[in-house]
Image 1 (cartoon, rainbow, N blue to C red):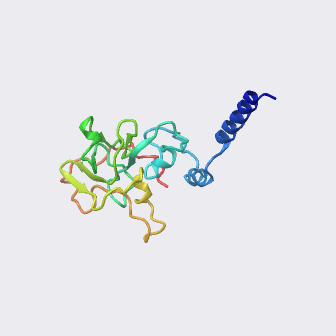
Image 2: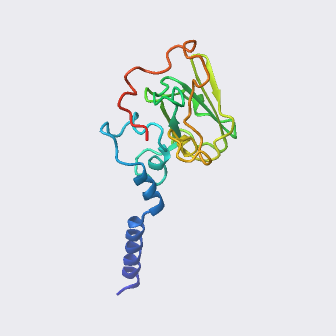
Image 3: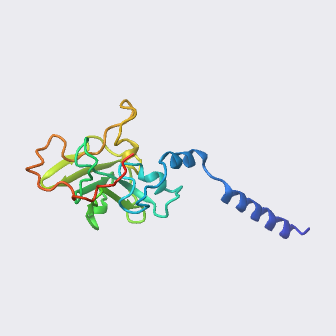
Length: 190
């Protein structure tokens, strides 16, 4: 067998084995998210879950998010705070909002594609709607998903924070409309 043919076979074998390898820890994290809802995939799905598990460099979703999450009306409501503006500023002072405002959809979900913004962590966060402003007291240290620290249903209160809630402690009657009626109906918050 010629040296060129042997090296070609070795390269093909190596490429095949690399493509067949997966990360069992990541695969388990994807499995823990559970099955997709009857609504399927799309911008309204998996409110409150860790977006970066699927929308990260290891996939399985096609789009990779730099930062993503869900803003709820309150910590005791599973209604998404629609049309809230999310301001993100990284350690360089860079912000994806300088190109286009980041606004939550009717499920409360927002995201910034990594192709649109490559933040240098830490990242500061502020959420506003109808004159109500919430500034995150700490910073995002490097995770792409709000739900990596904020859990909609707290299973371990020593290790996790509650849901990202815009109107807790605020008189929502003074804040105007807080969500889009009917949009959150049928959303599965896990």
